[in-house]
Amino acid sequence: MSALKRIREEQNLTQEELAEKSGLSVRTIQRVEAGTEPKGYTLKTLTATLNISEKDLSDADNFSSEAEIIIESGEPGLQTEKVETFNSTIIKIINLSSLPFAWFPVVNFLPPLLLMIFTKEKTLIVKQIISLQIFLAVICPIIFLIIAFLKLGSGSVMLTMCGLTLTNVFIILRNTYEIDRKQKLRYCLNFNII
Image (cartoon, rainbow, N blue to C red; front, top):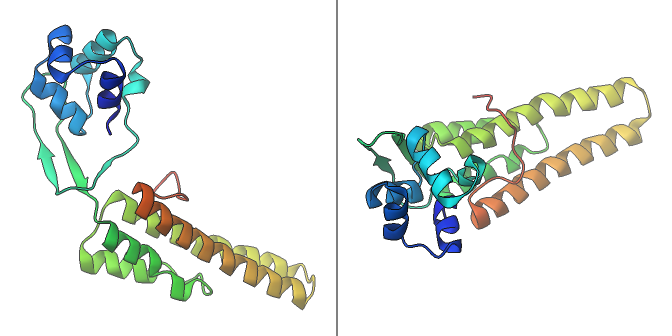
């Protein structure tokens, strides 16, 4: 549910009542509730009318579980944007493809990267999955080498290797669970490497 729809319903307003109260068209209200990010005049009008902050209107979900649509508007202050298709089955397969190589982090990002290329599933969430695996492919060997150079014994090296592998497996499985439940990742980076 979009932030605007939630706030509108909390204030017991219909789309028509909000449009009349704000001076915006019903279609503009519908577009914002469908996922178009309000900008400029539309944003200021909605926040003033609903007596909320601009932050309250920001919507955390950038994904749609329906078909891919393009929202266009000729009205001032409404941003034109493309809402990405969210195909959870393909995204879960891409995420789980790292499991066979979880024990060998240097190549664990290759299966999801190849699947992304072949399926042409280049959504933000897929890029975050691959970026996380690339990050782990860099960090895990560094941690392993530090433990090996400290010469703490073969037991600590083996324990570190098992710990890093189990951590990667946990991250992959937990992200798959969150993709299924909330259509987002539980563990991700704040940036994309690809």
